[in-house]
Length: 229
Image (tube, rainbow, N blue to C red):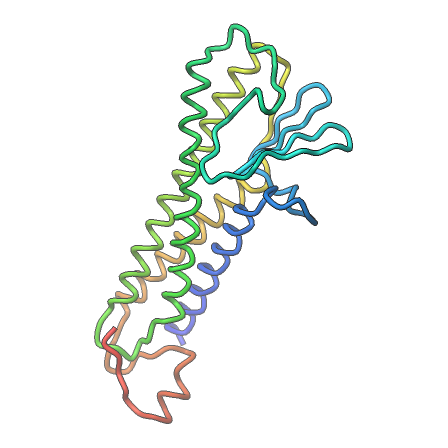
């Protein structure tokens, strides 16, 4: 029962992390249903609201909403978003922050690693003689955590420094959006739990009689057909 529990938990957390990361990826990219409300950060000045996602941004002014073209490595183009009055702001610093923000593309490998981690739990056969798949799953999970943490830190640092520089010249306020928390929970929290569970499965592996919860009937019917993976 213990092994079954670890597998169910690993599959649950890796799948949950993947779903949350998918929502981060598609937030404000598609202007339908609740997706425009899934943004990384929102800035407001005058009557204008700016919502930033990983691939584009939307400018909301009253009932009108216009969005930039989605791109996998967007920078922070302040003029495009209608932010004027930047005289005296360190333009070089803002340009560097915009360039650094293009590393937001790390959200893509984070999502891919979450997908591989989930498939790892689906493919593992514990009536095996080795730990090859759990090791691969553990590696992809920890790489997903690293990429997710880097993306999260990048978003926070780049936007915080950029908006603090803008606040010296214009009355702009900002707040973090739901996608930032989804990124933290999915890209860091869920994949970290998946990694820990992979390690537990590797340590607890007993090739003589250990088999997965979803293979018990098959194992009893066809006998000891072990896999070397």
